[in-house]
Length: 493
Image (tube, rainbow, N blue to C red; front, side, top):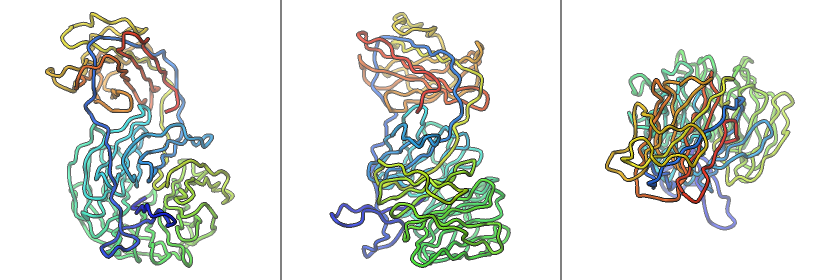
């Protein structure tokens, strides 16, 4: 999902997708501002601890929707299509992508020239500067890299996707007004739609160099790669078509007509590769392409809300979600019947959408958290929170410096009563991500909080879960007048 221009002129349409150049063309991208959540947070002198009880958390599938007008990301539980939380990101967030394990979400924020890393389990985000006007984002299959297209600086920023905060590791020139980006299943290629060049850039992700460009239709926008990596589907916004690229030859093998005045804006491919779903901006519909046909062809057209701009498919292929930008809603499509079965409201110009399952294992985990005064050694003022926080943990990579006045947060993670090593623990204050640390052989992780003293602060440690262990969180407050709060694994984000 890529660029949207937002206008505040009364009586005019508020959103248009695409890149553009001067002259005030309607597709000219609008830049957005972002109030990124600071990594520095205020802290407090006294110490406190809290402990969660081990409660297993089942895996659930969520849709993540960027609210272009509100500068936020909505989290939708696909089990009942309810919005479970809304997390601040940047102004005019556009593209959305999720890590393979479902634990981290990346959002391209236009005017801030940043990308937000959102951790739904912690309810917080942190940002990293990228290029000018970021609109598209994709995550590598191994979850270690994120790729961000910058539509004004005409390049793609490569950042680490498994670090907090992310770090920029490369910048690749790709073409004029790049929009969406997709990564090959083997992670070796990135495909970028260049809106004004009418081509798709092919980038070698091992060397972060431009290999070639593939001519496609007019104003290419959305990009998706088939699960086997053999084909790339590109929406030609200006032609009302979808170009199908053969990745073996880097040439267009098929051009699929979508329809007159359709203006296809985004495309998503089902996990089995048999269907492609196209958001038709101009005709308020989603087209369904049978990708197994020769040539591929549209087999159904599903009416949705006004001016759909993003589309994504659930991992089981049972539903497709389309963002209806002008209706402030998301349409849920039953892929078996090609009908809208639900419409979710309450968004603010929804743009990009991504869907993933947050996988957790069956083994329960327990997490303790202690906040200590700097220089107190082993937590002489512990005890307001219930649990076992002994205040003696030391993670492998504590954040912060000893000269700061904030507390030292110490977490301990266990599973089945045994310490869990090499698990990432996120430390947050309210919705701010403070730092991350990896547990040592004793299951302990540490965060040295920077900032001024604050005698009324609450901190949370979060383990987001993995393939074998359930998620867990623990919260402790340093206000002497308030009891330490506790949250439990398995709660909705």
